[in-house]
Image (cartoon, rainbow, N blue to C red; front, side, top):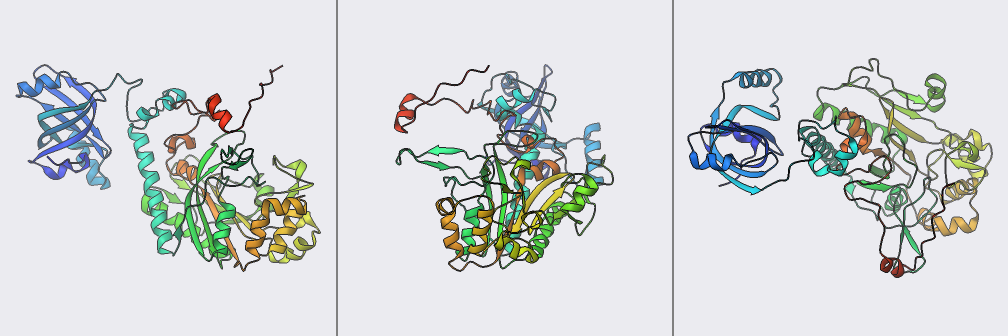
Length: 485
């Protein structure tokens, strides 16, 4: 018989349906047995009575067993059903646990048994040690809370895709195996077996490739990009994360801000109607003003910080382009100066000559912008340097020799010199945005398989050692670890 999703069983009142999913709760009461069944769409109660052969099977069932259940859909009229109907009438939303109907079970087929779970699969496993949850993530993801987080992540991503498609964007993938170039954090490097003593790098962002797509005439690009950065973990950072990455040819800073603001408002109004955006258009605050007024460049502007449904967006603009290397945490800084955001950016028009002549460096203001939400930076971007002379000047300010510029960035300079249009873009920290929208405290709660605070995956037990045979194939030899003093 064709499967019916649990969320749709209320449409089958009086009919026979087959549902497939997990046993959430099993309650054996002698001559009767009650079950709560769960699938990806919802939860519903089932009952067995006056069916001795079915009852024999029912007595053996345990939580988290996977079953196919056939039965008649009946209306419920108990207290729980009345409360469910009242909430439905008031909100127009059906809760995950569908309590206005139940299934009178006529047949149960066990599809797979389950060992006793490490922890009880309840609505939320928030009270359970996080390391235990991560080690058993396949169980943790079954909870209503985590199912909702993953489903909303999908829905937000789909809305973004649909909107950007309507705006003429192309979703294009860029390489994961790429070249190590100094762009900020440390690279994760991958030995190239077929090119001994040479290495790929995993991308910190698709920055260079998306600009090369603008050189290629693609004009409007986006992707949900996987990014990897080998940096010390703190707060809500992950060694690998997802960006919503955009780049637009012939676009001004105003064009990019307007498009992103419209998309963010659309996400909230269509998918989170219970939430309220504090101010539209989003306030714009200069970096200098933000530092003077709030002491940081990611201010929390919420008027009521105790209201989980208030969203206070703002743009931080007019960043200094450069800062002294001694004042930065850039592990790849080359000289006296390093960049505050992105070496591929353009300055404000009034600072172009200083950029070219490499004068008054500390006063150069970049055409860069961050989008901040409730005190978190959720995205950042800039208008890019599309003139090879300007990019070369920026790299020289950063202390790169002409030889290193050619080695690391020669392809970019040649592409810009081939007739590249003015362009700019932005990248959202998609995990962080979802964390805030879902009222979670860490991004680990909105990522299906995150790393823990030490950058490890407790479930897969990675990173891990590799065999001597693999090391030999890669022409690698491990040095003894230094003993801690």
